[in-house]
Length: 121
Image (cartoon, rainbow, N blue to C red; front, top):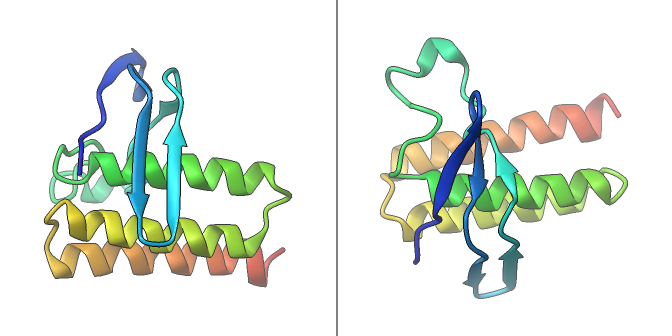
């Protein structure tokens, strides 16, 4: 899996420098250069353990952010968020992120999206 190339553009924001493509068995994601992300939305209290822009998982985070932005624009379709979370988990594993951390990030995202777009919609 290739890594994303980002540059800082604002406080806590990064911009994709070149187009990025990712393909897993059931989906292909093409992210245009210029896409902006803030990295992982990890509570500040946990940043010393899980930094939001760690190179270990940053590529997976950018893919997930992009897919979530698309899902949000697509009338907040819950199934699109499920797809984004599943691709996130697969890309984390491809990057070699530990089973524990991959499961923690994936389940945190699933829980958040379930609450926000299914329960409290």
